[in-house]
Length: 325
Ligand code: FAQ
Image (cartoon, rainbow, N blue to C red; front, side, top):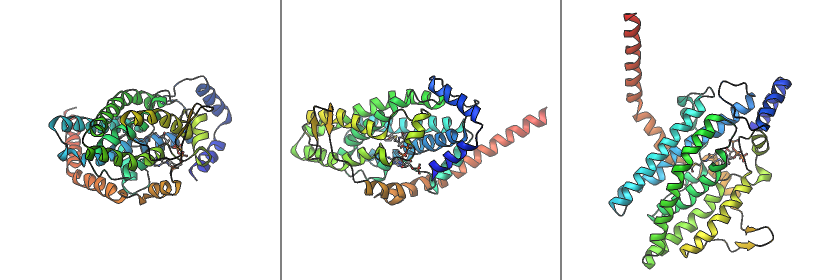
C-alpha cells in the first residue's frame, strides 16, 4: 500500500527533476534537507528514520527491566550507560527526521497510537539476566550489521547520525558478548540460562532484518535511492556468518538443526524464522506489544507537565523580548 503510494506520487513528479535527482544518488552525492527530493524519498525516509528512532526509545524498556536487578554495581553502571546511549540514538534520529519536515511530537504521536512501527525485537520479554547478554550480543549485533552500511546512506543527516550510533553500538555488542561469556563459562545453571537466552532470541534477532527479499515491499525502491544499501536477506546472511562462530566460541548451540557451513556459497545455510510470527508481532500482537505501548503512553502523559512548563517558559521569554524591542 505504502509502496504503491510512493510509486503513484513518483509518477506525478517532474521527470527532469527526478532524473537529475537519481543522477546525484548514482554519483554518490549526499542529499541534504534543503535540496529538492521526490515526495516518495522524503516519505520513505520519514518512515524508516522514524521507525528506527522509535526502536531506540522502545528498546530501552526490555533492558531497563533488569537495571534494579543487575548482579553487580559494575554491571549496573554499564547497563545504565548503554540504555542512556539508546536514548541519545533516538534523539539524533528524531532530529534527522525533523529535517524532513515532520516534528518529533508528530512522530511520537504516530508511535503512541500505533500508526508507526518499532522494531519487532522489542516486543519480546527479557526473562533472565542472561537476556541482557543475548540482547547486547545478538540484538545490538544485528543492529550494527544493518547500521554500518547506513553510514553511507544517501541522506546526509541520517548517514552522519549513523556514524556515532555505530561506534556506540559496537561497545554495546561487546558488553553483551562479555555478559554471555561470563554466563556460558560460569556454573551449570548460568550456562543453562545463557543457552536458554540464545534459544529465545535467535529467531527474533533474524527477524530484525525484515521479511525475506521476495516479500520485502520497500527494498527495491529504497536501494535505488540508496536509503538502504543492502537487501534484508544479504544482511541476515552476514549476521549468521558472523554470529555462528561466536556461538561456538561460547560453547553454546544455535537452535537450528539446519545450520551448516556451505563451502560453495561461502556462508552458512540456516532456517528461516517463522514469518507468520513476525507478521503477528509487527501488527502489534507480540508477547509484550501492549505493555511497550502502554509504557510509552504513560511516559508521554506523565511528562506533559514538563512540556507545558517548558513551552510556557519559552512563550514568556519570547513575549518579554518583543516587549523590550
Ligand atoms: N520490525 O519492505 P520491508 C536497535 C516492516 S535499532 C518491525 O522490508 P524496509 C538498537 C516495514 O517497516 C533496530 N517492522 O521494509 C537497539 C514494512 O512495514 P511498513 C531498528 C518491520 O523498511 C539495540 C514491512 O515490514 N533498526 O535495535 C521489521 O525496507 C538494543 C515490510 O518490510 C532500524 O530501524 C522489523 N524488524 O526494511 C536499541 C534500522 N522489518 O513500514 C535498544 C533501519 C520490516 O510499510 C537496544 N531500518 N518491518 O508498514 C531498516 O533498515 C529497514 O526499515 C528494515 C525494514 C530493514 C528494518
